[in-house]
Image 1 (spheres, rainbow, N blue to C red):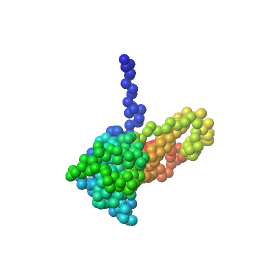
Image 2 (cartoon, one colour; image 1 turned 45 degrees about the vertical axis):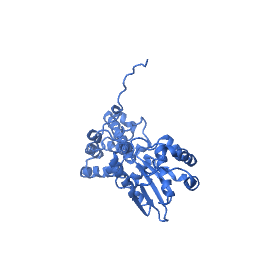
Image 3 (tube, helix red, strand yellow; image 1 turned 90 degrees about the vertical axis):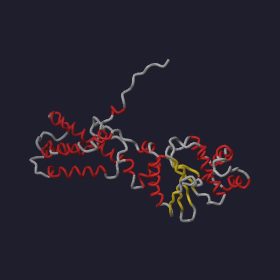
Image 4 (cartoon, rainbow, N blue to C red; image 1 turned 135 degrees about the horizontal axis):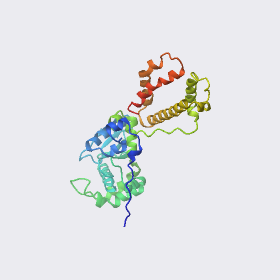
Length: 330
């Protein structure tokens, strides 16, 4: 008998709620967005990727439809050869039978003289390939053996609606001797997303700029770290401008209010550091720098005011922080 277990707390209770999440709900990762595409979205996504492929080839054409002869997106190279991107919209990973059928169509129509064999053939599949298919693609000899042994069951009556296609005679010799099975490969889902992100102008429109919820800011360590020494030094100068007895962190022990401000300032410093790291890893280039520029433009008149001392100028940063934490990233 299975023992009852208390339901654990949802993960969402342990993560800070950002302004964006409050407005739109949970951030959906690019991989999940890719897997949730419908047939129309997948076709558009493929066409968007083709804008990158166009820069790599002489020209790129889309075939599609029932008479594609095992070809989908055809990329022609300057030397007269071609490569094929076989795009499949399936809700589940592509199985070996589907892989063998597409390869079978290609081999048959090439043997019939409709076109030469491509130099590369990529499966581009929304839900990826299952383990058996991936293992077959990794071993060209195994892939060839699977096609030959499984031909009657997986390909013979599915190559064309006009007739059954037997794997025998010259056609069998062609498959055994002339077809290079090392040309067959796949483009993994994460690689598709990477190509789309780095080489097309459509990425943010399709997947959004935010890929992850902003994590909770790092907690300041007990000891002052090298990366915050300059920040702390400037804070001490501001305090010293109104309290001459303060020239080091140890001096703050005699001034509880300043010591409390130091702790608050360090939290702000590590929050800013965490935001910079998050922006660098998860946002478009220069997002963090643009945010800093916007904040400065909004507070520059206050910062450039003539202050009685460094402490007054430091306190002016409150307006900066209000703007900072009311931003979409706060």
